[in-house]
Image 1 (cartoon, helix red, strand yellow):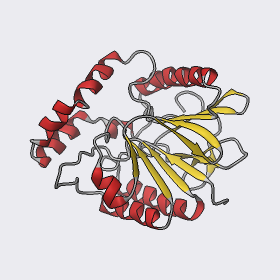
Image 2: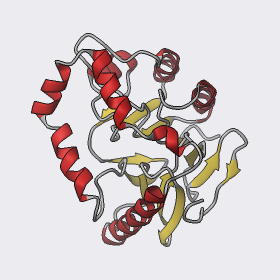
Image 3: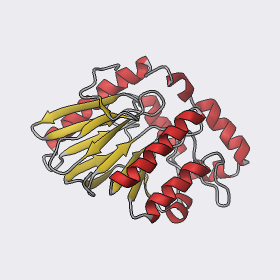
Length: 256
């Protein structure tokens, strides 16, 4: 693989997936270290992540160690905060060495000018979540949540999560939201001629759409059900692949 190859994944949901699925993701990360110069994890790496000042969530030590090894080996690792793990901070940045993004970010990835966003709260509709998002990301909420004992904080987050229900595949809500975000992304690409690629996660549905000649929308799917990821190589269209066989997913149909 050329050293400028970029790999993108999203919605791994560590802590809610099986140990076997978590081990498969670590194997993908280790393989990525030998193939790519940049790895982008586009939100919901963790099913719950909240950084207290002196406490980090348990259960992710092996994955964090692999990520730290990637950084030490010179791989540029980006993590976008998702609706499950937006509350990252200095531990991930200073101790692990990730570049942590709380908001959508534009990056040059393998020659593609790319808008990277997790996808939650984007596009029309989903009004209830958009209101909730403003509340749970407010400084007052974050300050208040820190006063909860970490065990209670994790229990609250666990009750709010429905990741395990997605193991059999995306839900009808995911399919509906996927169509909305795809339309929003294609409209953004039509308006933003400076962008070559717009990549999202969140819906757990892998999608690859050529919105205009040479300009693409890619949703990297998830690791709860699909084990899917995107590969960017300079001068080539993005590819949507499945781990571990590297089979191309192509332009997946809605609900696929």
